[in-house]
Amino acid sequence: MALAFALAQVKERKGQTAEATALYEKVIRTNPEHIPALNNLSYLLIDSQKDVDRGIQLAQKALEADPDNPAINDTIGWAYYHKGLYRNAAEYLQKAATTSPRRKCHLAHAYIKLGESTKASQLLMAAMKEDPSLPEIQSGMLLLNKAR
Image (tube, rainbow, N blue to C red; front, side):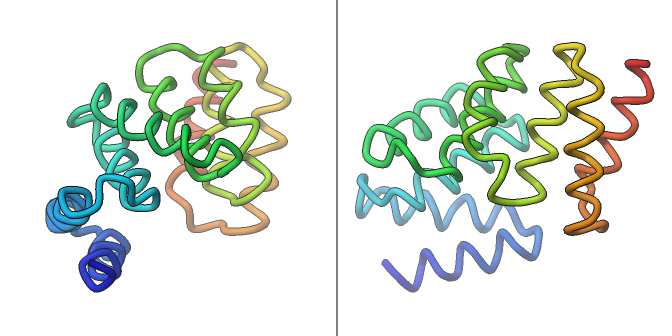
């Protein structure tokens, strides 16, 4: 299953989300406790908004096994963001934001929805310094400009 998981990660990085999803599903069928596969599959389901509710269920299962994992906290926070539960989203996203520029952007999106534009702007600027190519920065800036 290690090979299937590694291939799923490659497919995900290449933007081949359907193939990645199928491979993560295969890993989970074989090993329902595979935390990284649970989290990665849940993120794909949430980010694509194909099945946010199932994504939350998978991420919560992963979080029960690894409650301090920033990737899982980000996934759950991003799910709550997509469900319009911005306070809940921010609670989880705050636990993950310091670990990557993409996660900073996710928290910034939640802050924008909560009316906390200054915090959001600071996070987006920090993310831009780390990785200016992230699409989440642009979407965050557009959202921030609309909110002002």
